[in-house]
Image 1 (tube, rainbow, N blue to C red):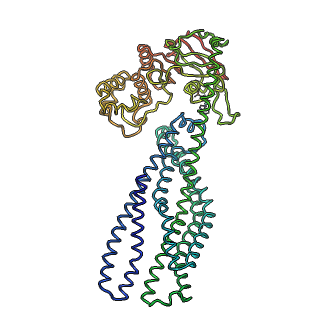
Image 2 (image 1 turned 90 degrees about the vertical axis):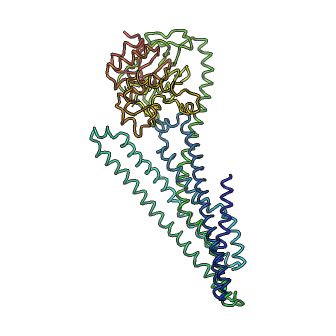
Length: 592
Ligand SMILES: Nc1ncnc2c1ncn2[C@@H]1O[C@H](COP(=O)(O)OP(=O)(O)OP(=O)(O)O)[C@@H](O)[C@H]1O
């Protein structure tokens, strides 16, 4: 609020200066035509002061417009980020429901351009617009009469109608252009992210042709925008040029009809200068609005993309809220059923689930869960992976999930983590899903931007803040990380980097081998020391020797694990095997 008020004051002062600047020529005309030396000198001093303060005001307005732009961008981006990162929306939008294209581009680029255009191009022009137009309308009416007002307002009305008509197709094209821009950038980000794999598989020329194709589509749309902008620009320029001559046409009408017959020639030239300033300034304010047509077209394009994105995020949150309500209702019902029936057992299950389990010993449970691939709203795309799955993941009973590739092993974990909604039944993490209780080690390790310490403590945040405020002993913190790195056989990485707090200025996946990346995820596990762990092929890139080492270490530390893996050597670390046999079938049995 404070910055808007400052901006309004600076704009008022700037307008006052423009007004005085506009009157300078008439003062010069008067002093020059009357050969009045002292008046002339006074005009020179006055005009220098006016010009200097006009410059200061203009720069102050620019500064405030920039501050407002940054503030708006910050507020809008934060609002979108809050929605994007809540309820796993970032996952749903990027992996499951691709309802909006390029969410990253909308958050970074579209918001930036929208706020920049609005705050620096449009707001300064509009903030005092009604007052200025009112004032100069009054001045023009006083000096030119009714005819001047009709001519200026008439011209503006015609220009507005024409521009509104011409702007429609440009707005639609800007929306498409932004989508194409995002697709083009995404293709290059993909090449950057997977440079090594592409190089190994000689995919360079294929990627080049894909990039070329996307570039072609983008440039085609840009050309269409340029073509459709041509009539719009022409109309804007026509209004600009017409507005510069209409004043003189009206003045001609007034003079030739005897309007200023009583004035001497020096008074007439001073009058013409003053009248033309008022009317030109009024016209200038109108043409400023008309000139914004292009900016408004761009702005409408960005606003459409941001608005659509916000609508989708809000709809996802609403859907999540209503599904939570539904599941609460269901869980109340289930509670009663369970009391009556006890825990359900499955006939195809060789090992019956114990009838009573100590609640605190259960980390996760599946009750008659049917898992299907996400269909994106089209039920013909739906493929059942596992049907009626019922088991408990409980302390001291390590479970191995096995089955052919694509049989749905990871999908069971996705359902448990609430990334996918089961077609039927209930899968839930009973303990709190925090790093101290239960940790997931995903199939593709994700290493975040930052230091080695950030990798090991992930996803814990703000540790450094606690160290800075003295709430956490930095030596203890660093010792814990060192210990985790040593146990994960990654201490050499710390030495290579020169310390755990050195920020690696690049992509960790290019710096570490796939095996080292998996070790890094184990370092996380060893740092957080949870009671339970879920490992999705977490040792697939490690040697058998390292795999044996890590599984033995987990057993020594008393961590209960549920793991997915293909190697038979890891069987001996588990008590139960959940085997997926395809077409929704599964068996749960003791390890032989
Ligand atoms: N986001 C998704 N949308 C639609 N189908 C998907 C999606 N993710 C995975 N699938 C499909 O679901 C099926 C099961 O995938 P899942 O990742 O669970 O297999 P998996 O048994 O873990 O295989 P692997 O041993 O190769 O890791 C596969 O056919 C896969 O193509």
